[in-house]
Length: 192
Figure 1 (cartoon, rainbow, N blue to C red):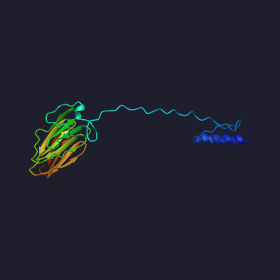
Figure 2: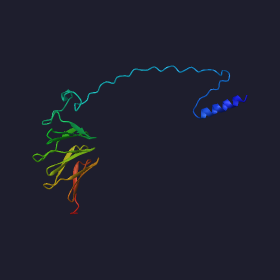
Figure 3: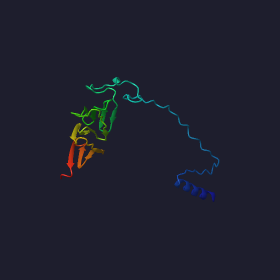
Figure 4: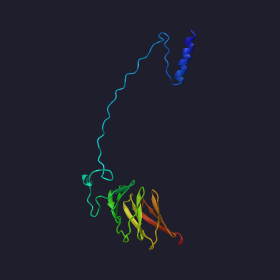
C-alpha cells in the first residue's frame, strides 16, 4: 500500500510539471498504442505572378499594358519608394516622377540642365530631390507636384533627406521642401 501514495504523489508532480503519467497498477506492463502516422499532403503549387521586366527578369515590357508617354524611354529602370516612383532617361538628363497618391506621371517644367550635366536624384519615402545647374528641384509623392528654387551661379546646395522633408543648405540659406505641401520654403538666417 505504500506504493499507491508514492505513485499518486509522482502523478501530481508530473501533472504540475506538464508531464502526463497514468499509474497502471492493475496492468504494470501495459504499452499504450502509438498515434496513427500523419498523412503527408503534397505541396500545392502557387499560381505564377507576372513580374515587370527588369534586370534578371526575362520578357519585353510590351507584354504589360503601358500608357504611352511622348519622350518616355521604354527601357528605363523604375526606382521607387513608398509613394514615389521615378524614371531617369538613359543619359540622365530627363526625369519623370510618379505619385501613387495622385496616380499620374509628372516631369519638372521647365527643367534647366547645363550642357554636360546629369541628374543625381535623392529618393526618400514621400519625395525626391536633386540639383541641376542653378536650380534645386523637389517632387512630392503626396501632392504629385514639383517645385524648384534658384541658387547663385556655381553654388552647390547640401541636400539632406528625411521621410517628410528635404533640407537644402548653402551659405546662410536654409530651404526646406515639405512632402505634405509639395513646396520649398527658404530662410536666410543672416538677414532675419
